[in-house]
Length: 235
Image (tube, rainbow, N blue to C red; front, side):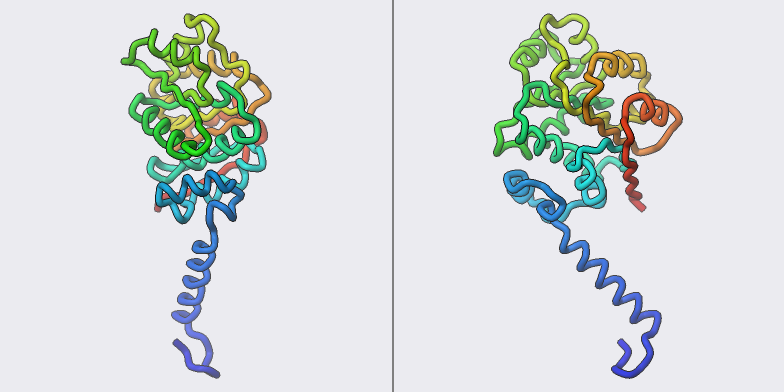
């Protein structure tokens, strides 16, 4: 470090910038981003002390009620980036069949459900996972109980929309398309179009993707309203 009276070197400046960057990151908490107390407690119970980059960028925007297109990799913390605003809105307006999360695979659907249930443990959130390879009648019974959050693969969800009596998404307030590039690469475009036709136009939509492909851009134009783009590089 330069002594008093000596000009600052490049190394000194770099050290100062790093310290400032670190202290800024340390000051940011879920609470400071606008997350309500009961959900902050749920984050603490999961040992989440500092929000990840995607959470820092997207939570304030989502909590203001804006649509989001988020470019982020798996493992970036994006599930909480969309789960926390949905749960916070659910607290304000408790409604059945409040949110739908579309995912490309059953494994991811179960992971997302686990995270919603962990974050929503203090508010009694009910989730239903609707994926292939599971008995469709058991799923229909779960949907009849009208869970707050439905996490689904597009193909199986369309099966229920077309064949399960009494099931509709008319009360839906939030739609999430997670790993949208993978959903579209797996040829779920027709199913996604069918789902978009039956969900309310007045809703909040979050689209998360690792890459911005032409198909994802087309889906963004069809499904989001004045979205804010949030991009977090893993590099």
